[in-house]
Length: 213
Image (cartoon, helix red, strand yellow):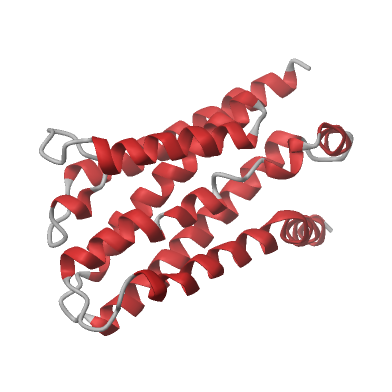
């Protein structure tokens, strides 16, 4: 019975948000050939596309995890159900993270087809780290502020700063593939761990807030 209810809950999440997120992600990936030619793509160019463009799937998936609850009436309705709003967000985050890893892995394998020098594991790890960075910033701000659009806006501002305003020669630069696409960077690992901790910290904060309602 519990398993059946779990799958029903997953299916409901797919209906209210995940299906829309997947369509936007697919749209982004379909548009990529219009922005860059894959034929004979250079290693550095592949790294740039992965961490600057494809990593936006993290913002699309993880960053909008609380979007359905932007409607306060809908959020109140969810609170009246057998599972809390915080538990629903935890479930969504887990699903969105798995989808992010899937999309990034699929992208890197496609990239590998056009350039056999692409180090698959390094690119997947670097891409997922960047995707989680944008996604978790957006989700954390949205969960704490109760406003998904604020989370997206803050993330976009930080994204532009990191890409266009931050010096790659600093001791810590979060986008490791842009530093060296052939080598795993310590900053990539730190960014990944820090992003996950930030998001789950926001979820714990929200869970405690829900208990005190």
